[in-house]
Length: 311
Ligand SMILES: [Mn+2]
Image (cartoon, rainbow, N blue to C red; front, side, top):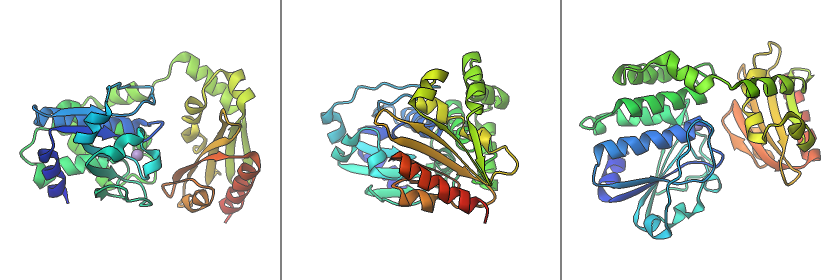
């Protein structure tokens, strides 16, 4: 499988890297790491990263024409289904490779490399470039740093239930190979601006708990009052999970279409993605989301989580 991957990279002079819409750290750092890795090892190739949405830590703005995509190899990272690819022109590419770690719902690529056990796409990428097939290639400190950062973000600094011994093995490999300054990277990713810290304090007051399910729901008025945009607000979902008696927790925000986007997390093995799928969403067993649902659907969804959380 990896052999096919390397052969396709060799075959094309141009490569376009795609990732999912509203990129999180794993999506962005997977794309950045792959970009750097390809540039380091194939100096004659043109490599670009597609996508227009922003990620707070790093943004990339590569201008990409239709003609460029039509002649390039497309590599889509950290994206489980075709609708979530940021820049739908990826379908114009003559050959598409997917590298992902989400549950398999849509094998949209010509070559699908998926490890559902990997805690982050960056973990899987680290494993791929550390495999025998890639043994003659350079893995630069920058590539190590990007992959490590992606792993920190998707595993909430190695604390999620998806974190395994393999995650830590890959992290150790990257830390050694790139001589990484571990605490500097954690600070770089997790330190907050004072205004965000103060906004987060306000957000906490919106927490509601029903049985073993906790949630924060912010409508447009709340978001305006706090002065935070919906996606920035939703980044604060993880800390709700530190409340001892909660098994499932959610963060919902109203969007510009008066519908709701919800992120949901669970611990102690509560499987939540099957419920999300019934509402048109999806994701991992313990971390998933639903978008574009109305208030009644949101209430129904939350009711299911309240019930599930007590079993
Ligand atoms: Mn991911």
